[in-house]
Structure formats: C-alpha cells, structure tokens
Image 1 (tube, rainbow, N blue to C red):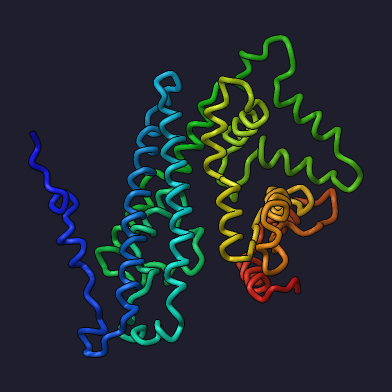
Image 2 (image 1 turned 45 degrees about the horizontal axis):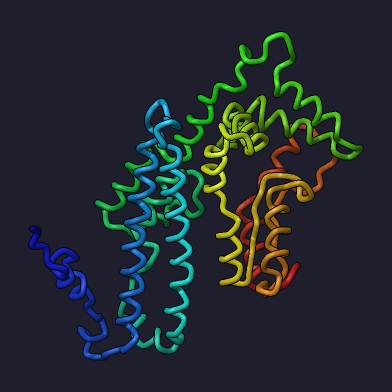
Length: 343
C-alpha cells in the first residue's frame, strides 16, 4: 500500500510558501500584492501544462508516420482541445485580477520594476514552439533585451528547433491523396478544381486567379504553408465529412477554434482580424460574421479588419506586396478598436 501523503505529493509547503511580497520587504504592506502574485503563478503553472501538451503533440508529429489506426491523431486532437480549455480558463481568470483597482495596483507597482510579464520564459517558449520565429516578431531587440543572459540564450536556441507549425506542414505534405497515380486517365483533382474556381470569377475578381496559384501552385516566400501543404489542407476541408478525413479535419480545426475567438470577444469587447486576403472573401470576413452573429452585444466598438486593399485587378506582381498587412496598419487597427471607432 502506498504511503503517499497529499501535502507531500503536491509539495504544498513549497508552493504555498512561494509568495514573497515586495511590499512587505519594503515595510509598506500592500494587501493586493498577494493576489497579484498568485494570479501570475497560476498562469505559469497552466503555461507549464500547455507546454507539456504541445510537446507531446509535437512528439507524435515528429514521426514520419502519424498512425491513425493506432489513435495517434485522436490523441493529438484530444490534447489540443485540452490546451484550448486551459486557454479559456486563463481568459476568465483575468476576471479575478480585475477585482483589484488601479489604485490598489499602484500601491506596489513601483516596487516590482523592472520586472514584467513580458519576461515570462514559458510564454516565450510556447510562442516559439508553435511557430513564431524571431524574424516575424515586432520589436525584435526588445523581445530578449529584458531577459537574463541564460534565458536569452535559451530563446535564441529555439530558433534552430522544429516548430509545431513546421511539423504540421510536413504532415500535410506527406498526404498521398493528390498524387498523380491516384488520378489515372483523367485530369488531376487540383487542376480541375483550379479550372472550376477561375471559371467562377466575375469581372473585377480576375486577380484572385493569381492569388490561387500563389497559395496552391507556385508558393511564395512570405507564406508559411507550402503549396503542397495548402492543397492537402483544402482537400481535407472539402471532404471533412468522409470518415477517413474526420480526425484530420478535427485536428486542423482545433488549431483555429472560433469558440475561443468568441469567448475572447465576450471578455474584451473588441476584435481585430488580420488576414492577407481580399476583404470581401477572407477568413477575417468569415470570422467577423460569426462573431457578429454570436457575440454582437459584447462588442464595444466596430470589428477592425486588416486585410488586403482593393487593388486594381488583374494586378501586377508589384501590387501583390500590398496584400501583406503591415505592422503600422495592425497597430492603427488596434488603436481604433480600443477607441471604439472606425476612423
């Protein structure tokens, strides 16, 4: 029979003794500093669990074969759904810290300088694990400038490690369904699909044909997904109701969960959607429509969409650069959202 003792198993003495108030050290006790510490410690504990789950999913996808028959894809979906649930909890957890007024915070804020939540190593590791590379960050120098040398070295070392995004792309590229040998004696599936899509375009949409090829055929250095991965992802989406694709679809869908977006809107009252696409037929437009339908009363101001401008079509390769939202545009949209206006 085990002699495990609850407080020892959870190391409660260590955890419950890990709250040292800076205000007490300075002889100026601030009551709400305890809440501030516990909230952030809870965040870090949940970050540890999220990393644990993400690392396990990455371990599954590092294999050259993700065995559907052995349930590996189902396990990956289940664990990513757990991550989603944890993130939901983290959003709602902020309601607790909102019981602390700004003046309560000012009682001890100056004693915490130069510490900042931006120094959270686990959150930075999570961002890197998911696929956010240093070259894609805003304020690259500041991102690591506030870290200790050993932490900075750890973050920089992550740049050479594989990410979940890269593993998912490699998995999609291995999909066999679009190989030529599976389409004998007829036009390849994607050639037919491209012909149907281009034939459906109306006057003023001719430039979308070039965008199609950029996403699914030729590729572009500014896109994360390769054409092969994008083709497989679209194929899975189109045939998601077929039993063979249901788990693959659930996995891809778990990477973009609209419920999480809606819950965030209900909490913050704001939404900024950034998408490299035409504003009228973009994922941002679809998300915006779903949020308006599900959480309209929670919005404190107009939804801000940062998308491609209405460029003349058909447009030249030079104008294709205009389809990439800039940092300045995103920043301006965030300011508009917080101001509650559209200008």
